[in-house]
Length: 404
Image (tube, rainbow, N blue to C red; front, side, top):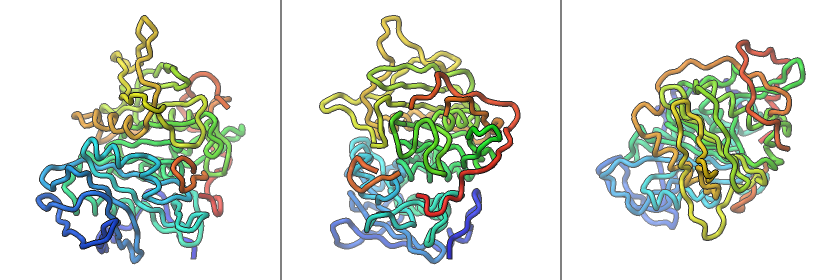
């Protein structure tokens, strides 16, 4: 029987049914877990949770500096379609950044079977209707609670990152009104609600399907030549509106003020909104030659965080010498981590904010991830425009049978 789920709701009883088990990657005894004060074996750890009678899986990574005495940040790493947690960590390198910087990574596993044996995909609310699909929102919420119970975690520093189908799942999780993640990153996957087609034939995010509980700092990456989740829109039924339409809608949901001025270097365009609701920020990297692959820095090139100088309106400033204010040699995980760390400052992530009106998309604006490490048309100039009145959708692109 296909699983049915209404966006924005998840069973509270899920939290009372957590049955905790765990195993080390290379075997051996399972260390007892009781949060702070209890040392644990570091490295990779397979984790099993029982949520509403179903056994769910994930993989945790504890850095070598973990002692159980100091509260650490956590990053949830969401795999793409037709992948699995360990493959995603290899793709994203979040485990390497965690080892270097001293935080925990948890990679949850989707409930749907992927196209290849041993791979999985996410049962994204409102999008995927397939046999075996489970309540992913309840699972993610339960996984967050499990991580807080088992490890010495700072609950104010829990973040998330999603690639492809995993980013679409993460988008849906934020849109469902959850409040677990203080910041979120997206690689070829940012969504701002389900796609809806207006009467004039243009696609936009459906405002009724994305109601975040608060402004969330977001960093998003997208390749202009991505054919799986097209940068300019179109593609499969669950996609349709493009990256800039999603980005613009999030600036409205986050209450961003002013206008971001894009800066381009090395084929990468960086833009930043840093005057959003109660301190939230939105940053974007667009790759002129980027495909659906996870971006990779050039060999032997230094990786440095985006160091843009901004004025009170949150506009990126370019120096008189035209030297770019950011490093175009991108390592998304390292760049997201720097972005998340900066969001640790007081009031950067708001606790309440009213969403802005739905997006009106102007003309020209706008997954097949595999298990190997890197597998899974330019729009009109300027961002999409906001409209004071929600556009009336003609039909939706949701509910595509067998879509991943």
